[in-house]
Amino acid sequence: MKKIIVAVTGASGSIYAKRLFYHLSKVSDLEVGVVLSDNARTVWTQELDEKLEIPFKVYGKKDFFAPFASGSARYEHMVIIPCSMGTLGRIAHGISDDLITRAADVILKERRKLICVIRDTPLNLIHLQNMKIVTEAGGMIMPAAPSFYSKPKNFDELADTVVHRVLDQLGIGVEAYRWGEE
Image (cartoon, rainbow, N blue to C red; front, side, top):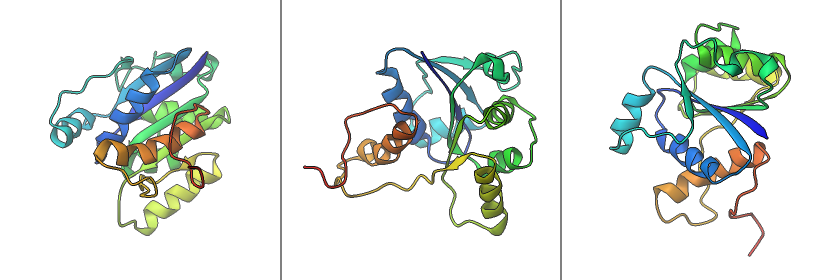
């Protein structure tokens, strides 16, 4: 069984987390643990005009007894979607002050896959340096930059152009537009 942690921060881009949850809920033999920042629920409601509903077990931001707070639980991947620059900065500098940053620290120390889906623009030098630090530590920076090759017809399809790339990195196959295929 594949084990994945999904963290949602208060950065703009709740639709990406919503679409990731949708796609992950269709996969069998998958354990997903979820943690939210303080502002994630507020931003979700403001951006999507709907109550936050998650089809997986949600752990409290300060729940250091969550299984993925330790490497021995063997969670293979972590996706922070969207990832705020504050969260990225704390991860880059080893500040494990909540379950999101602790789980990211665990994933990096265990040499597993951390994917930070950043959404901010423009970027300043501090952001870029933090991205470099996380990348050098083994994490992956994946900007929430949708593609238009597939001619998306609505916001869900547009967001899926990013989410499908995340799922590819997790080794979860989905039916998606592929460059050069009919």
